[in-house]
Picture 1: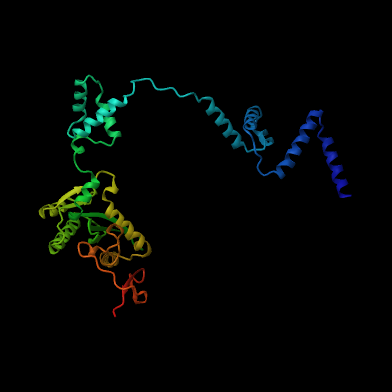
Picture 2: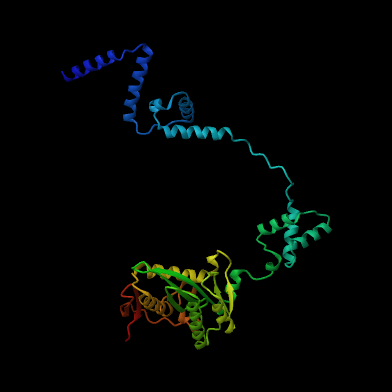
Length: 357
């Protein structure tokens, strides 16, 4: 009885919306069938020709009639943009200009650069011109740069990695890091590290790192180096931070230590201390709430003692910084039950020592 009532209401409604032709009735039936199919299929699979047809039909129907499509209006617009993009795609044509340098000439330029490290681009151009080969200076410079050969004054000298490796025993690096306290006050930390042994030589904390404070940190480090004859420091490696004043460099110059500046915007050139700062943050600072300057200084000094005396380092063959330069300690008998734990920084870091017999 209920279905019969619904059927009568639908027929009465269709008669009120007078359908003028069979075509309109057919369109109405197709729309209803499409709505039924949409309820059964979540996402229809369309082929490329289906997308082309629907995108073309979307240009013929007004936007308010796009409800008939089985995809969203944004999808139709995206398909149309792809068609426009493909329309303006042409075959690649080689650019007109100078012919490329042949491989023999390129090999000769690289050979001259390697056999004569003090020759510049103009000198190589003149030598080629004497052989009847005309190549511009810009082309020679491009060929050398792509081959990894720098300018003439740098080609016969050590690279940055070679400099650090060969002088690691006499290099001390320094850098700043910032720490936010519980009360959102910014504290600046200046750290010094010895490259070869990875030892933390000094830590300073200040809320206002002016020239006077930075110079005093340099004096403190110089006095510590005088008390340790094993550290023969020749270079101080730092970045170009404006906090380092002239008096800071003058302290090291008076001690016979040359200040070496890293290149612009290259923190990887001072990678040892960047690795140290990252380790300090991951192992300690990210898990401690700092109250004030004195609290931060105590925490850093306790961590520095752990870092120098106990923490093994991969770059040192899993040795400790204080063990570098001395004989490798012989391993004792394997007694796991004799391992004793020691807590550092309230249990944040653990050290394990062999229990005394």
